Length: 232
Image: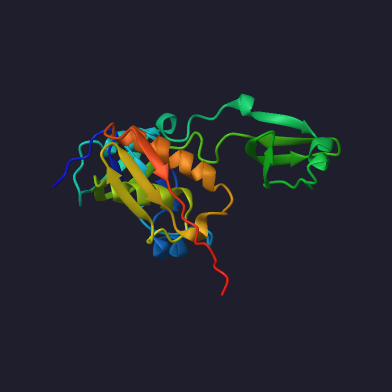
């Protein structure tokens, strides 16, 4: 069975719990999400794709995946500093209430908000100011993950599809055409994606991600074909 190394692309299943109270905060399993009351209908529950070392998951978790093998299961404890970080008191700020009015937000305690490009949780609301905690909700908490390596992904075409699905979840990429021509990868995405919002950012992101996995290729060409309608 293939051994996982830094820089590899893998699919994993996992369930994450806080060590202190054993509460589930994240999982790739729909049945567990429903049972533990963390189900989100916007989430597609399936194995998580990541490139080891990119910290798409907490660093302490990714480090422990190195050396595991396909099909292997493991319980991993992650200290807060290698999870979602230690709590930082400087990230608790008082913001003028008019700033919320400017964004048409009616502040309420325990409400999640995005201000100045940062996401935080409202701790207290007064007549003139709002106290917001910009620490991650899991900052300062030790974590426990139950993890299984589903697959090490080595085929470049499969890697490409997995990266597309990660950046645009819910989109059907099964008809994507991928052809390898020496050091060039030619890709024709499904017609339905052509006018999707953020499709250009997706192309750029997938190209960058693939470059971090392999040095075999120099270029990715995205090809589009349009049929000419002929008058009858």
